[in-house]
Image 1 (cartoon, rainbow over the protein chains, first blue to last red):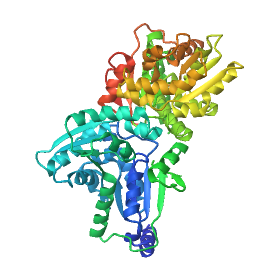
Image 2 (tube, one colour; image 1 turned 90 degrees about the horizontal axis):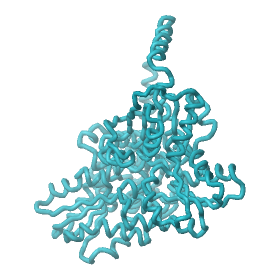
Image 3 (tube, rainbow over the protein chains, first blue to last red; image 1 turned 180 degrees about the vertical axis):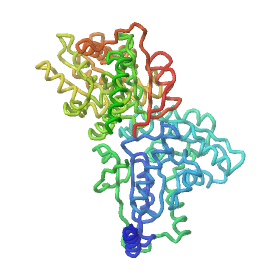
Image 4 (tube, each protein chain N blue to C red; image 1 turned 90 degrees about the vertical axis):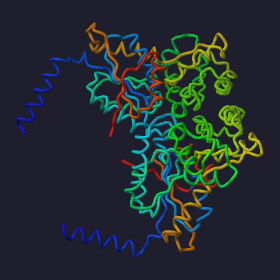
Length: 286
Length: 286
């Protein structure tokens, strides 16, 4: 037993010598491939970093499921990434971020950031923002996590959330330029337009693909905010504060793991990343 | 060890005396609550039977996932039902039935029936059926299980399958009487109408809820076929052949287990069953 535990220690020391923490990968996860919009923003802003992405495609979507189930899934996703020795974790899933409690992250041995704080900060970057609309999955809207975070940061905001459960399947069907998608979006936006929103927060990592369509449907003075870019900026600040930025200039890498593999997911991954995803691996979480 | 195994034997004998196999429950499972349309048909036709239903709502939908993943999920669903000592199992999920292989069922210690054979029989009950349209999830269409089963039974059929992945989310959103649902359905039906189908097979247990809308959209001479009723008839034949019908006239019961519980699923369950689902229990499969 004694020698076994020594050899584990030696192994750990060897790994650390070859691979200091700052050179370890970032772990990013989502219920599916939507989180690749965050990966794209992270790779644009932090090109030296290695990224390990996990998409829980076998159990997607998370947006319609209960907080308890989502927390169980997220814990398993994090365990998988910790097994890849990541130095920090990004929860690139609004529903998982929305249902996580402070206690939930506390036991994680590496720093964790979600997408809600960056999204809220992006929405409030405009000091004149007063009437904020949010579109998201049912789970994210019902959690009131965005509404609460916005209200905590600025008093007197008018906040209106709309659950838009059909947008993810429409995007995954590839019907982004179709009339039915425009009709369904118009229906989801109607109560927000009636409230005279000045800001629309896209609180789901799939929705950036709808930005061109939304831009044509919304009045010019409504600001569109998505959290992918601000999330990447938040991550950079966190890495800098902890001395965790990868100093090597060799160029980062991307490794994608999905719990269910299919041609559709590979095609979707390409659309979310805007370039070929490379070889996708199958992840087993159990 | 000897006494332990004796006591197991005695326990088994005791259980058998109180609860002969024919009085055991039927196990029915689906990826979610769509399979409750089959439960409704089974309870109408076999009112003395006890039914244990499992909906794998934590991992739904199955329709977009790979054959390998679906088979793993189905094996876990069956294990759960066997743990409830069911006398037979109905796979009330088209995708799971479509991806199952004969080998897959062979090791199951109780009889298993799926929804494809009954659906195919219902479609071919009309001897004049020649041009058969199928709408289903992407997984069911891509499996070619319906196309293959139809072609095996009648030569010279023209068979046209259309993957209609948005129908399940539209039904779950409750938008059954909406214009957008009609528009999307029209789009899915268009290639089938162009082929001049005489029969439309609804190859997903969610779709019976669309029958009133479909009836208004299809020409009068197109026959609409769903597998719920024929599946219940198939089950009755199988129980009769095996002497497995419950002889008690006490009235059957229904016990619903879901792997994820939420208010939405309870509301959906009510709509699929057409009456209150009673207390729904949370199932843990791991």
